[in-house]
Length: 290
Image (tube, rainbow, N blue to C red; front, side, top):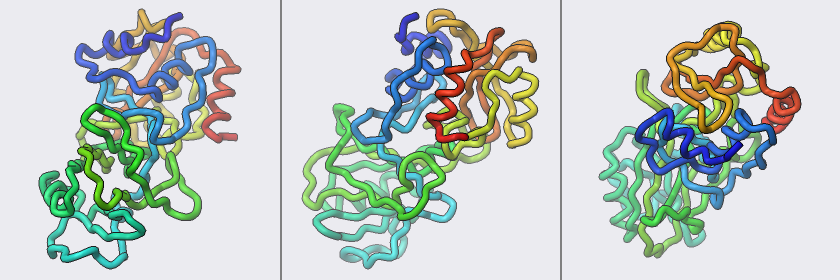
């Protein structure tokens, strides 16, 4: 069985975008392959998250999982220099870095860029809709799509109930001369498709540590309904070459994975045969479930 999973996405979506990131490969291997995939570490070196055919994404970078609802990116630090009353960003200077938090989550990205430009930074910032476990995640890249390692985060102290370490701010070196694009994940509006999505059983997602794998479609449909979710569609096939997207499958088929597409809607992988028990166990343990 080949691992050329970019062709998988191409088969189910004619315009897959820039292709699968390493995290998506990891998840697809777990679902479809006979051998486990290597564990991903949530570090900035791992790769770029982008919109794809199913908008499938796994956090392959440092995760900024602050709550959008409570404005986890808002700081009480004194403002560095004059800040307009209606400023979209709150910016301070500390230890050779600009510390940046978002005050207005619905501002025009041009407002963010104007504030950053005033500091001599060629940095564009936009907020994009993401699934619950990815809300607050940030990705900073160069024009050549390289992850910018000079950018740092401020992590929230204590336990984190989402992917990563729940950072609360972005730090950019004072005097940084490069060009950067920054995506910061926010909650999606009702009916708005996610730009960034991960498996619906990842940490922080509604099916985390729910024993659904290998249950029949009818059973999983009921489980999802209990969490406010319905099934929008399915992916079927026993190899990357044969996977395809369909609207319905028999309720007797087995569910092996799934993704959130928009608030309240999920797509699931399903087939007539269950996943091997040892792979289910490895996946369960990898997610920290017991």
